[in-house]
Structures are given as C-alpha cells and as structure tokens.
Length: 108
Image 1 (tube, one colour):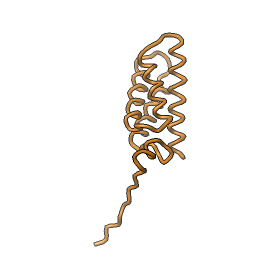
Image 2: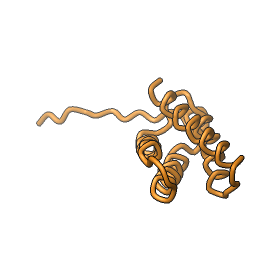
Image 3: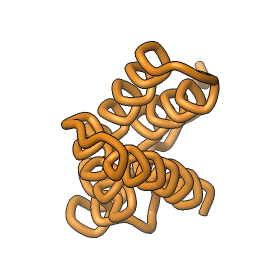
Image 4: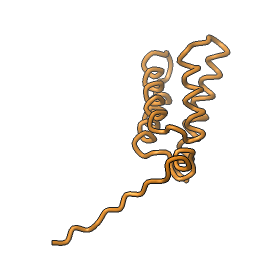
C-alpha cells in the first residue's frame, strides 16, 4: 500500500507541475514528466520510470529558479521507487509477477 501511495504522490506532483508549465511555456521536459507520471500511475516499467523521475526532478531543481526542495524531494522519491519496485498493486506485478526474496538463516 505504501509503494502505491508513493507512486501516486510522485505522479500527481509531476502531472501538476507539467500541466502548469505547459500552459505557460511548452517544453519537452514537461511532456516527458507527464509521460513518466502516467507510467508511475500504472506501475509500468517502474524502475525505468523512477530513474526518469529522479533525472527530471534533479534537472528541474537545478535549472529552474525558485525553491528547489520540492523537486529534490521528487527526485528522491524517484530513486526510492526505482530501488524498491512498484509494489503488489501495479501493472509490473500483474505482467511479470511479484518477486519475493526469502532470507535464510545461516546456521553452521
């Protein structure tokens, strides 16, 4: 449930930023941000989408004037999603199966 909420929060943030900037001054980066947000919403190709979210968030945090911390938080969420995966409620889990890692005790 936590990963789903994280994906939705990052996606909503990207879509809101992208649509706001597209109305003022259309840029390719904003179109990419909206496309990546749609992938996050669906949980499709989440590791790739997470890396793209991190790149877009870091780029916007560095290149745009104003407060960069919201963009850096978005970049951190993208990295976390890329490392943790999409979660059980995602298209990746439906298409490729949910992977479970079992850690065994090492008893000698």
